[in-house]
Image (cartoon, rainbow, N blue to C red; front, side, top):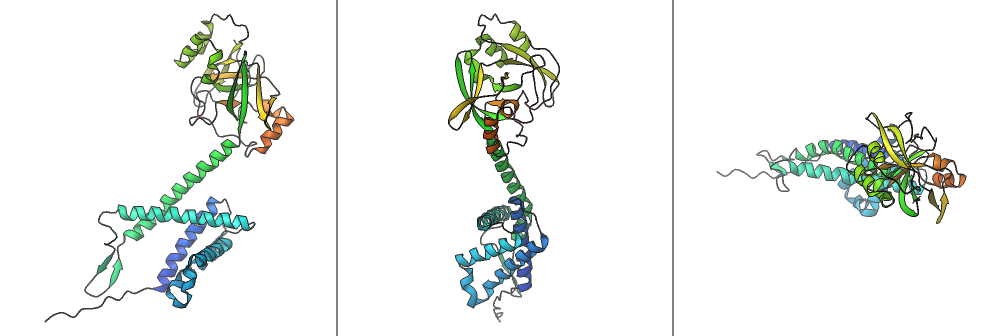
Length: 349
């Protein structure tokens, strides 16, 4: 006798759907507030998450299916962000809403990737039918979501931190022109407010520049010696200088994580900064310590200016103030000649 076929009847628990969406919407709103640097107020955030959870139940009310359209989803997300995160003005609300979409996409992508990374899980293996006619999904999706939350949070943290570092760095960059002897070298310079290095003899501030920028004005033997990592003191004393227009100094400094070292520096004729499509000479002269290795790993800048060159001129200070984050300490560059070290007493050569 054939067994009767028991139809599969899917069972949906509204309370479970509501609780799952409440938790996920709370996570999304909390990550959105963190990304947009807004304070998290838990009462408002949970209220916004509750609005999103209630909206998820619209799927089970056929007369309200119009609310699941794209305009309905946009309105629901705007209300969620308005209540849960807050706004200063309408443009701020739009930015916060875009941040919510960004967080949701990253989280969903991480969950999907982790879900299908589980062996044996595919688009067709998501359901199981038992003899009792109960239909349920595999636990891979739930596990993927649970693991995806910290993974997505770490990924978003890295992206936002990187974007902020780049914006802060770009706010501290200036176009400069360095004149050595009779040659002029344009380059991009970082203003490092943490640089307190001065020449102990002349009391002039010390800036830094990539050796490759000004190498054409230097003796080839000196460039070769510095590039090959030779002692700058020995390299300087080995020179037979006929060109009196070049002035050198040995600047003592203490590198980050290193002991006391000596940096070979030159004194340029002048350093000019671009201001409103015009060039303005800096308020003070400065030694330029030569760095055989690039000061910036990604090539964003080729020189590090001492803040004394900018802060001593009102017009250049105005240019500095217009750049974002100029009054804050600039990101530490990757360099063998750290620009943010304290002064070490010594003598110039």
